[in-house]
Image: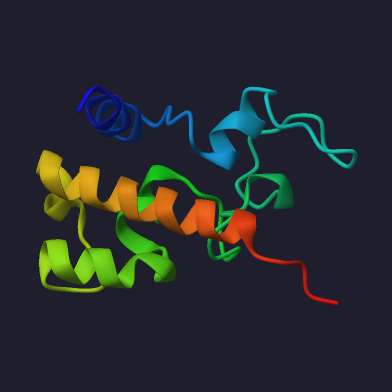
Length: 112
């Protein structure tokens, strides 16, 4: 419950500690190519789940294609709107879905 409340608050404030883009922006996820930047197009800040865009709160809550299922269950639609994520239960469900996908993608074997 505590972690869920923290995720909700951090996602809404744009300072989600589970976001690659946020961690790169504050210098916690440097790469050999880029130590730190605020560029949302920087590959270091890409969503580890879909790799389509930076994993900003808007991407996670409203756009990430890997969260179509959780978004459909929570909202009745695969694409969300800003007013849809005012409810804490919706934000918590999408954060949990994102983390589940992220942990699965981290444990997949490398393709050769």
